Image 1 (tube, rainbow, N blue to C red):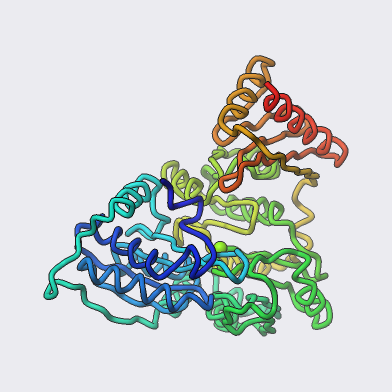
Image 2: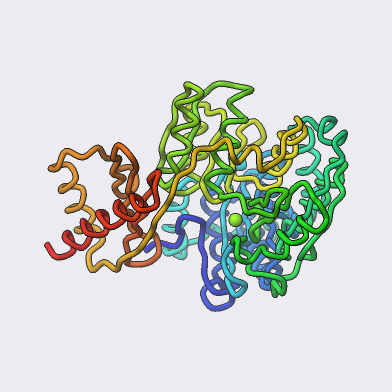
Length: 448
Ligand code: MG
């Protein structure tokens, strides 16, 4: 049985994600770690966060791990802390999922997301129910450390040209969506000399302001306020602030694929080296890599795959087309606040955000999904068909078929019995044509 999906364990709080589950996952982690070491445990702003965090703390202590309770903090803030001060981390978060959800995510000692094989080991222990519970005198030590977010922000500021940013006295509107980033982003910007206007910047697990997913249609107030106040840009986090999205000075939403390509371009101006992104990302990344003469590595979807590949190839930069950007000199995980600080650094050189987005090639996308009776069989038949047709493909995750003027990706969903089909081309019509080609391949393979 599998417990961990692409992003840890997720589900409805107190139904699937219960205190009992949190206790036993923490006990499994303690067993896996041989009842030795320190684990930092924190949560995002969800209502069930304290309940689940307390349970995870109890489970870890029961197996003899020492625990540092880091309180409410963004996932990248906890990851940064783990790398410096702990041997592992447990983050209670459901990221961008709706308010009723919560989840449990494990962090490795180097601050990266827990490796897949480690998760499989922990699952085995969990389902065996055999935990290394220690005797009364060996239960772990407990302390709280409320400095996690200060420490994180201090290190972000150190990683950018803070003086250049402060000299510009930017005006920024932030919408942290009542998530964990409410405790970091506004403070980071103030420390960087910005005038900050906030929306939804009180941590509140009822998410009264908007859903934790920062979609363009939920950010209309952010756009309006940017325009009305003449701000330099707007920024919005998801619930655990590992992702960030932007609106430019005209209140226009910056497509996340454009953001990724734009940031890649900037990072490559300072240092040449490989860049990494999942197969689902836009051709824009390939264009930038080609223009800069560096190697681009495509990975399977999932930020952990991107981060691991980046470590392997010593990448200069990497990220996903959903506002998840990874700055390896800072840390090997998606980091929303770090991305915002980098945007300020770029703008400090005198450009406007809208100028930067114009420098990226325009592409059009189309996507659809279709149910499947037999994911593995259909995938196999699609792969066979594409290779028999001699098409140029990449099978690192599903099948991506490259054409001269675009691509289509056929990928099984990680959570539902469906195929997702994404296409991209330089014209909208062509993107739809490629999407339909992909759909037809799946439908034919389903019939076979
Ligand atoms: Mg997230």
